[in-house]
Length: 127
Length: 145
Image (tube, rainbow over all chains, first blue to last red; front, top):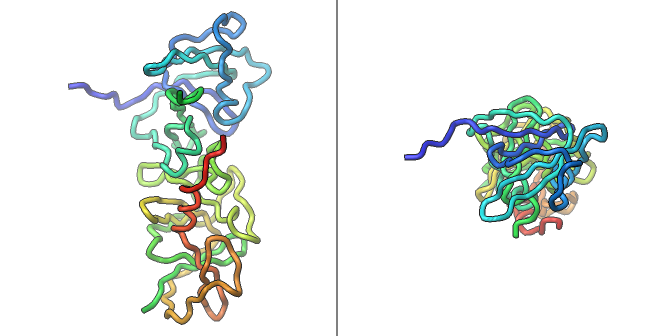
């Protein structure tokens, strides 16, 4: 019998009035962008909420594991932090909205700055 | 036969909603903006352990104004139709009105999207919203690429 943890660790990226979150278990590595030598990384905030990383931040490249697909490098800035969230606090996106926002899997709205949890499998296109 | 409707207003524009589609009336709710969502469905609210889409009537109705991120309205109506649940922030809600069928007409004095009919409330014609048509319009529309 496999038990699922009641909490999920998220890597949180500030994005103005909201925060964008990735499942921490998917993050294989984090390196400064200046040392990254792989394929051009996807800009996380531009690909999700449409914002940009703070100009004064030191951009980093995160390598994200994806099921049955090559790992995806993404670029982000700002102060990243880890946050544990109860699994049942992650509210799945309603179907009516989900097809318009394929990158978003769930929302955490606990009264603080909302978290938009990215569906890593759909980030960077579904193919 | 009669028709039950709930009168509501958004930015001074009065509308009527079929009462059977109304699930709950909440107070002012904070909502989470979702980038990339249609302008009429700009975000979600948490309701009964899940996220439901927020429908901004201010975007749909002539004469009303759109909600801005961080802004809310005094009441939030939770509406269910065709298996879909929506949150509608409104400024004012009145008690359910039972209207005889002769007070429900095809829209003529009023013109609002998703309101092919109007009802007479206190002698005033009010557009009667069609939640199924609203939901159907989003289900049929293509996501922007």
